[in-house]
Length: 432
Image (tube, rainbow, N blue to C red):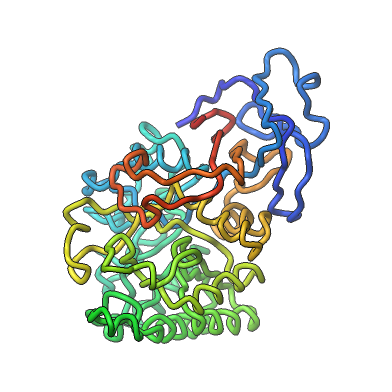
């Protein structure tokens, strides 16, 4: 992935965004041997030595590299949609230095040999760090629990069944119990499949006008409430990857207030888009969970600002043209997002709905803390995973120029502010 012998690198004259202290300072970052060696106002061109490559950031922001906890990488089995190489190129261009790969591949990541395959492929073809998540249940079928201990030993850092919700409460209870014994993290997509039924968008007036089946918010909140009651029984580490409703936020707030070891995330799509964006049956806006009403979006933004929502994810789910160029009800759900997550998130900063350090915290430090990674920090001794970006530079998203193999972006032709200029992984420049 990276060159351990990369020459020293200094980024100077930057706005340093520290997600731990939530403050901005002026200065630089000096990196050598894959680690941050110095940081702050004393990092200058004169003070770093002649061997060091010096990049004058001209007042651009420098923050820890982003950590994306929900990425479909395509391998093994769906290389027509994405590969580790193309996903990592998209990640680097978007300032993402670590991705958590979903296990819903073919075959699924439910065997130590598949974990090993993913790690070897990432080592050989990826520009960024790729961490495997493994299945909670064998074959993602929701019946028989996977070998959590062996999968963890092989390198899996979390356990999830992707977009599949475990319907059987006893199976999920057992999985949580095993995970607790191995101190493993369960990431469970909360949706009652019976309530969701054949729905394809948010239930409500707009779905009725479009003649499309609706998915009520209760399909998410009832499943989440069940999950958190099971967590209360066994006290295992639990992360809800995609909350999208006010009801879910209220349930999560009660669980956190009760001291349960729970966290939650939200996709950048649900923070910046709503059901009205579907317009005339635009399938790039068909997502799981569905885009919700504007009131729900605003509640998510408020929960992010308050810290109730821990993490922002891209929910990168590439789909090929044949899967999207269908009637809305028949098209596959999902959107690419690795390259646009930061710029889309900056919409909230420019609208003064959230501070820049809070946005960066949800994309760096909080996912690192939840996954127990040393990354996500601007600190001496931390891994030298950093990104330089201009938060104000305007640009228009051209899907043809995205690095992902699939081009199904909901931000097609969107005018965004914020462009990544440099991405560094373990001290090596992987995008410029």
